[in-house]
Length: 592
Ligand code: JFZ
Image (cartoon, rainbow, N blue to C red; front, side, top):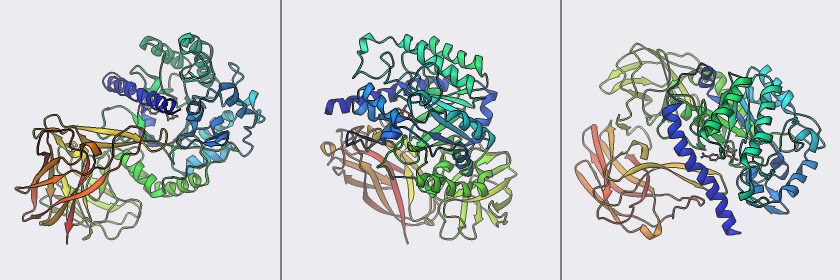
């Protein structure tokens, strides 16, 4: 049993790595090509993902056993025989489903597109399909096609509509990808699967549901690059304007999807891209999962992704009655209220050209810079480094003009009060030509904030040191991604952080890291402000992709900064050994 469990994870991880190579290729080959159909997608910024299928009927429970984690993978995890699983259809009767309500929810939330699972890995078509009887009209007591009214209602609400379609994984079919517990892998004919089910159903979706904004393919397999291109050509023939997700595979597709729950540390593409998150931790409805993001977390997540130039597609998992989780409805609507007032600073923007600051993030439009203030400085002055002059500064919410002064470090704007706990937006009318973002700009450290973060992505690595997103999960499939400084094993492997400390004073230095017990008790040294501080690492957490990764905060120094200015913080192992730690953040906390 344990091995089956691990095998599932390996499958998911394998797709992770395959994806990594393919997206690298995608960055080079596809993202450079201009695509006029992409513009609506680039401007949209916020979309609704919906995972709906027979897994919603089970809600994560099978034969009295609870499967915590992503519910739509339950069939795979439990090695549930396809015939037994298919019986869920007999109970699936979403009488509470209302296309208009779902469309209205997405609209109220401030979303500009909706993507719903037409068929997930379980193989069940949530639409009227002539290709296979394993569909919602034929196999359930509901006997209706919910996708018809939904596509219409979503378009009527002014949003783009798209389908998710699992083109390769199909655990119901003897020739589909992934089901090795019922069907002999060596006897599978993937081509037959593509030609008798996958491609014909994709054609149905493109033919019967009006103009689609996009098709969201996922988890590629079984096709060569030419065959993938021919699948794309089939889509283009029916709907030339329909965008295709990068998970179509083989480095193709019109927009890029990062990993589940991943915000890219550095954006590798100039093309359109999406970060995908689910509102709680499961994509499909799960009875146990109450870890819903709060409205504030939703707004800050959306702002973070926008500040890097991408879209956020946020998933909700309706249950089998056709109802959205109550907390999704409530919190999405609440987030939408913020967008009604501040949407100008999100929709149609490009990445902000000022690096993250202790007060928050930026987005941009021609002649405009939007400051998204998450943390209020104690004295109320928001320092925007790098700007020389501006025309005007005002609160976006009420157009109240704000005073500003030119300082040595940039423009400093007086924030009268924090009006919005989620994110207070200050709009700047620019005189300067938009600056080009400088990834090497120092990180601002100021005594105006409770704490200042030097994150792994701000590190300059030397020797064998690397910066990498570490992927792990709590339950099955609820991936977390934490950028870390890794592989520092000798005194030559160091990480250097550039900090612009804007006020003198005492600062406490705290390292936040994960460290495998077997590798702990190694010494490291941090140099800052012409002094060296030594420390020994603590045993915290082994890294295994399918286990929680724990981080500790260890204070290693107090330093007295006599003069404001640029400082270098350097960290490295004292001796050669194994990896010193996985370093997430260095915190600089002013002592007042
Ligand atoms: C896939 C599905 O398996 C999952 O059920 C859900 O639909 C999600 C949106 O997509 O899972 C993946 C696919 C790709 C990666 C990770 C999980 N990846 O490339 O990191």
